[in-house]
Length: 429
Image (cartoon, rainbow, N blue to C red):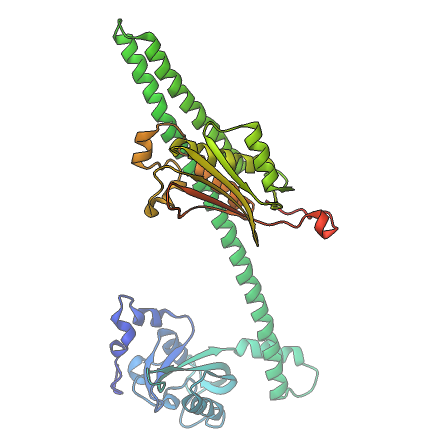
């Protein structure tokens, strides 16, 4: 890249598809890349504009001959901190900062006339695989306006000393850094808000798609049965009505589950209450006994904080799913496994292949063998159950089992008021 023999394309990062040279030249701050012997290997457009020099006048020359404001050996004393900083980078292999450099720069509009300029410099090493300095990246910022403002604030206080000026500049830099940090924080919050809104929109779109997709299936079946009945005068009316009734039942199940999903997304969740998970399961089994043989194994206490109504819905969905696939029996287990209360619903059916254990929680997903064996179910039950569990800090998943399917619900154990001597704390669902 010039007389120095260092080519930009020789840098290993250029092996990617990113045009790093274009990126380097578009940076707003002046940058130069130096070799270990302090020769300019590259300079971006901002640096060339700041120096008023062409690329040919800069590339391949020692940095102090190409430095802004150097003319006929002037500014040598002011540039000593720069030389010292570069030497520190070479020896310590760490970034070094020169907070304030003053130089007399020849005015572009008045040749031979000079003006005072102030710069802030940062020198950073680029190390090779062996840890040696391959390049030094020099960034310089013109802070003349900041210095002039600081001087204006010191007017009437006598002569302005360099160390006072430097301290003032540092103080202003900290203020700017604080403003920058607050702006970044506000930007992150705005991005989080935008992401939340996008997620809400995507959820609504998915919900609408799920609703229209799954409602169409039973409606199509209803229309087909009605068309057949109307087109065949001798059709078995009772047989047709039985089929229509089953399709309407499925349609009603889908509508109910869609309404449940809508409430999960839109309605204010019920306030969590402290109760024993074992007691809830016992009550639900007594109130709504399953049609299959049920074996229970309960451990007390297993206190949780959640909505009783919503956890009862999780249990009913898991039992309904087990009843559709079981052969002889369903096992329901409640245990305390700190830090969780655990509910397990196990059937002795065909089981779930490992590759499907996550997919079954996707809306409308039903394995082909399960759908062929049983056309019941809306395709939303397990998805609803998992969303309720997650709403109370829990997790619902399908686990290994030697025979059949095993669903495990884990919820954080809650401290009972009797054991703690304090009323239960309210927590958001």
